[in-house]
Image 1 (cartoon, rainbow, N blue to C red):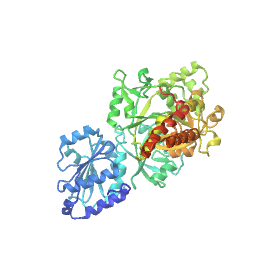
Image 2: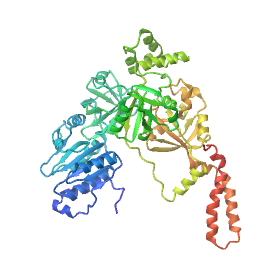
Image 3: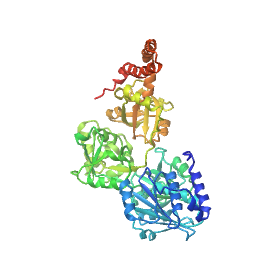
Image 4: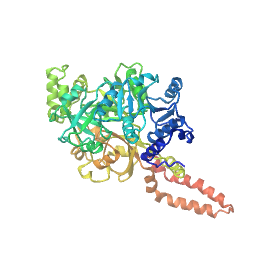
Length: 599
């Protein structure tokens, strides 16, 4: 029986053992399946014309390691492969050609971004790999991204270390940027450790590579194949050919002083205009995009996306199904609801502007002298603006709109981790909780809590949000962010003054849609910086336990009443209890349930 807890190293070692056998003996191995359906949008095609079972064995391993689609194809039928690609919405095809004619691994791709990334990565005396752009042209396969020709006696352990990172990296590389760059790790430290995935680059380098602050880039260590997606900031204290990395990035990539790093911008979609969402689409939480943006989203092929305000780094996560096309919209247009615009700092003038964006906007030629002075007055030197009147807010919004502040950027996200499936015995109880108590959830913007809360395990939300969720102080709530979940007690965010001591907030409405989470809880959720959106829902199990005192006597009375009936059939009595006790609890829990009216 297959053990799902076996490590990747176990599967790779098993393959190495098989590869050392005489190839004729592989014909007798019991590999029957030749197609494996995966969870993401990448398809491995394994080709070995001389040995069908060997190709099937590799497919089985690739599927277990990476949960991708995998197909053993000894005769590469373009029609059959094309049908599979269309049926499963495959974005990238990786072809593994198992060869006996070479002692190297040759990687071939026509994609200029991937080719540049590979040549930069293998420029440090890596003798096992060769890179070219010609071999892949022999295979007329739709969406074929990269061809791997794997020879004899290669270091498979090293190859799978590389393949593990390449599988994730190659779908993130921006095709608009044809060249990857090599930078040396600087001895300097980052100005601050937030966000945790922060790197700092020289402004000239950023200008040359069309990067702005809060953009994302792939940071890759070519010596151990480890990578990270980093948040870019600017710094003038380093040479153009150096990079400053946060401690988190250094630890993850195992970097040392003056280590060589390959950097390439992440693919993204930049909008040109933000508009108000159509009223008929507000309830579903969708965003409407123009046809050109929708086409780019289709090409990315991800299931989850992050929409980011470049200037403030505020962002929201959306699923592929929440992006709909508006055929009448002008190119580059996105329509959002008021709440989405509020989350992204588009509805009100930003409380402050980073120096990078202040200089960028101030130097824009579209502004006249009066408008430049307005920006100087309210946003110079990272100050918090003092815009109080409605007229000044409109003026600030118009100025910022003219210089491109209202441009959302869309990034693809990796697959989110799914919530752990309940076993078959716990599912009826979970169904009962949903039926008798009724779930309720909201999306809230993450901010810092009170200074006194930083070492605690509590979070704070406003009184109106507590009412919407149907919870009281010290109740437990569940927080979810990109597949991570924690359960914490909640207290009321009742002091505007205390929350402004730890956050830059000018608009009172922002506090009402925010949740104060201590740093160590943000770390558990994988939230690298404030301004992100997490899902908050009330804990149904806690509310059931909290109201156990009101249920105990009715349940006990039900049991005694049924037990005292003159019915000789014990199973009939048990059946009556199973039916009546949940109904009794349902009625008893009405005050908790009806805090969330069903419309």
